[in-house]
Image (cartoon, rainbow, N blue to C red; front, side, top):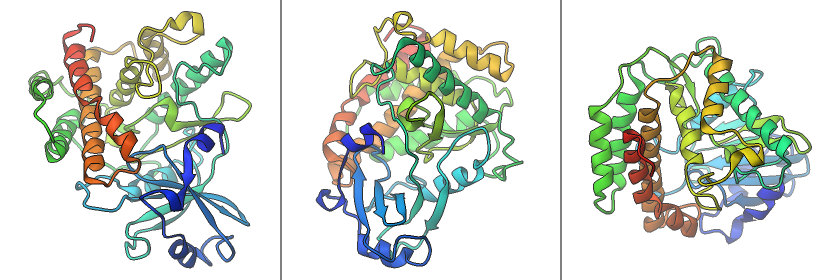
Length: 356
């Protein structure tokens, strides 16, 4: 368990979204080692969407990830998809935790869940990587770039994920999906978001035919690195993964870096990256293109704008769950929800090429 995980965890029994550990133990006994004796659960505060718990047993530690309770948006919190994609990625160049068991019987704990291995290592919540040296920062970011390019080079048919998402223009269907999700969780009228949705629809690029596996939330804080090195041990949080356009993931990385630095924004805005050994946006994109054999990316402003739009919709969903009392961490949900108008404004700025 990383130092970050220890800081960001609480006893499961003290959290409003408690885990029925007795039910889990009864169900898992005989299915995995260690559940025939005492089991303890610790809830990670990270991960607003699907509550996640560290299970400690005499046979070792496991991680349980479940759907949250309450009324959920259709297709959201798909732990079964998380389980499927990570199972398919075993033994590829994309490091993931090993999956152990999927339970789709809501009667066990009130929602479906899966259990996977605990990946021991370091998790970096701040992309500025203040705890590392300049050389190590450069190596960690290069590894992040390598894994992203490897993900987008996966032959989805070869690993059994050819039907993991529909065919057709990814951005068309994603714009439709996230607009519906946003409207379903809308609590206030945000003029910039309405304008952004209209602009993204009007300026949709022609589909270039690229189709592959996308993570959907590819960020440094969704990765586990070696405890004493810069090798990625696992990419986490695959809830939003699908078959789609790889530029969505790449633009998502750049979007995150354009946010303010600090615990909430977790961005690199205003930071002198060169002095810290961190890549510029352009350098990261160039390295990615080189690894994938691409000459460059046109219309990147659109993909960046789309990333801001989708994150606005996601954060609005987090905000709504917090107001409804269904958030994994209600206080954190409220803080994240406060970013909704800012993300919408940034999306419009990215589309016009103006600084946000």
